[in-house]
Image (cartoon, rainbow, N blue to C red):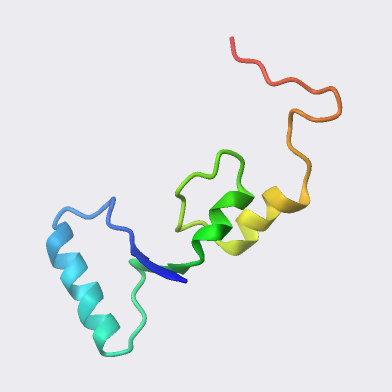
Length: 77
């Protein structure tokens, strides 16, 4: 497992990261930290680095067939 921070929406990223580290040192949960197995990214086509996505969402890509299967074709106009 790998612990990853997500600070995209934060104005003061340094302050929020410091707070998250403080929580981690005290053994407390923090909503900015995600504990993810990097191998789980391979469940999503193209393997995006979307560590904040839940295991349930990643599992959906594993369980259901891709859109471009069974003769279907994705198009953009």
